[in-house]
Length: 254
Image 1 (tube, rainbow, N blue to C red):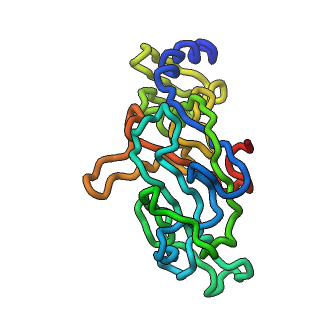
Image 2 (cartoon, rainbow, N blue to C red):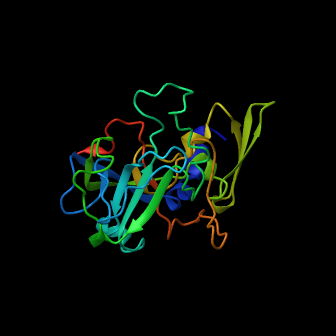
């Protein structure tokens, strides 16, 4: 089959795998109204200390704060209420020398549910207040989330198999065998003629919900209480919040 024929055959499969996702629309500064934002002042419960890194002892920086009650209406109240906060260690002091004892290596901070050099929590909305002066307020500048741009997201290649599209490679002949029982597809095509990323790929960058954009392969965590995988076939009951902090200005300016 040709590239066009394969893509045409997969059309119904692609349509059925679309998930609603949203890009954040941001404005410089702290938020008013909704508490959703990137970075800036760490909003805390009055009297509580700022969270610190379990490895180096430095104050964790606020990376994102999401008001679950102010999400797009299409999501309903699927994710409950309160304010989700993500704090993370920023590695080192600005003038720390690589390899010195002032450098924080964040051992295994990337692991799901690790509190070594990060903290994820949900706090009742009315309990949070911006402290003044704020511990860690000299971090990345605040960008208030003032809106959401909806778009349709598609599964990343790492999720194609779980979503119903199996791909097997023969690197000797430089061909790929594609099978999708849902649409009755069984075909072979040159690897260079139709890369799997051209079939479907998740959007990268900052986004809410949709499909995960994998950087180093699929890494769905499992619940530490019941052992259930967070790989949910239809996306219901699952919230993905990808924050691309490699960008100096997250989100789309309002």
